[in-house]
Image 1 (cartoon, one colour):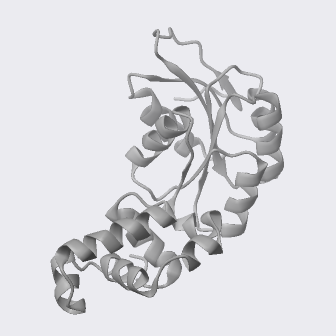
Image 2: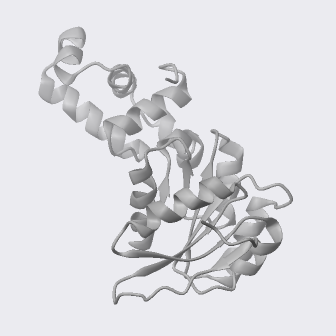
Amino acid sequence: MLPNRSIDRSNPIDGPKSKKVVVVSDHPLDLVGLRALVEAQPDLTVVGSAVDPASAREIVSVGCDVLVLSIPMPGLCMPTFVLHCRQEKPEAKIIALTDFIDLTMASELMHSGADGCLLKRSAPTDLITAIRRTLASGRHFDPAFALQLNGNAAAASLSERERRVLKLVARGYTSKEIAAKLELSIRTIETYKTRSMRKLGLRTRADIVRYGIVRGWVQSP
């Protein structure tokens, strides 16, 4: 249970490989869930949390490796806050969690210095993946933001055949079914799929489905 205050500084006993995480959310229940999820990992430790704009600004002073920010937070301009965090903690990784697909906001967060942006409806393991990927000097943006973040050039770089194959994959067709539908070999279909995924920065079939939702190829479940 969180203490009766807006800011919490934990003081765990860190293991030699433990990475320090700070979580920020204006919903106490979400905050409890985020803390529990992170602390369940043997290589991650929550060292602080905040539930309002004032405490969020203060918590930036806590030494950490990763900042997980739940957005939006009334009274706090997140792109400006992310920029402030980036200036105060140039080495820390910053991951934003959002309720809905806002491509403009995702782009602003990226340009402000965020290392990742994830939809809250994603699987809990996706957040852990995002944390570890950013810690490994990478970036992790939910595939739902791929069109905006990768730029129109990436989408435009797909050939008509690559686009058609990817659309069918997003709609649930197997490579064998697509091969029969397009009268091509399964190997050729796999080549088109792999090439298009690489161009768009997609990694899994679930990524393709999310991208398909953004493109309007399939309906959101």
